Amino acid sequence: MAVRIRMKRMGRKHRPYFRIVAIDSRQPNDGRTLEDLGTYDPMVKNKENRVTLKPDRIKYWMSVGALPSEKVQAILDKHLKRIEEANAQAAAAPAQS
Image (cartoon, rainbow, N blue to C red; front, side, top):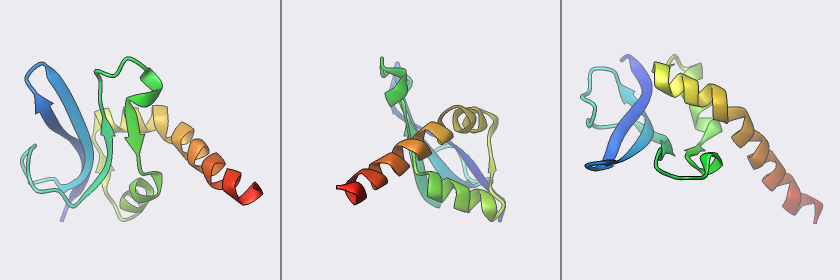
């Protein structure tokens, strides 16, 4: 099975909302997914809050051969490191208390 990491469009007319999913490449754009890996909401004004990702699951799927689409690769390049650092700081904060 050829797995891709791509965006699945949700939302309504003139109000796009995307889920970043691991999906079989033969499935249609709104087809059955293997796993939800995050979201992308281009209508949010604060650019830092547009993207939510699950970095550990994205790395797992890429390690077993899943290929990201061009748009998802751009999102990952831009946001993945920032989100990983934020998660690490959040995990370290309760441990220090």
